[in-house]
Image (cartoon, rainbow, N blue to C red):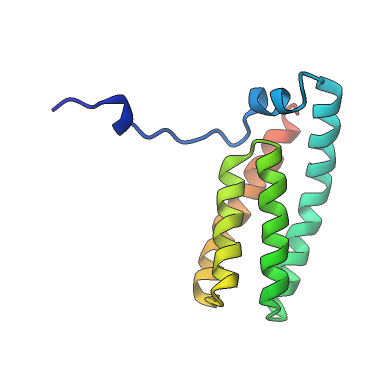
Length: 121
């Protein structure tokens, strides 16, 4: 049985450095500055997300996850954006059990992108 190119699924990189640099029009200084700012704000976003979950503020959870998703997309961190989308969607659906499931995935993606950015953004 042969496999066509359309059938092969690739896993996106944690951080697409080349794609991000293209978004910054090749400006490495800007790319580095934006990556540093993102890496600096992401832990606070994560803490705010946990606080909103603990107080059952699902609308706030949705807003924070949406913000993380948008920023992750802008810096070409597709897996993080996808994980944030799942948290956002679970909060929107008011599905707390599913929210906790996706929150674990989001936590792993946050750790992965922070490690990746620390290794040379």
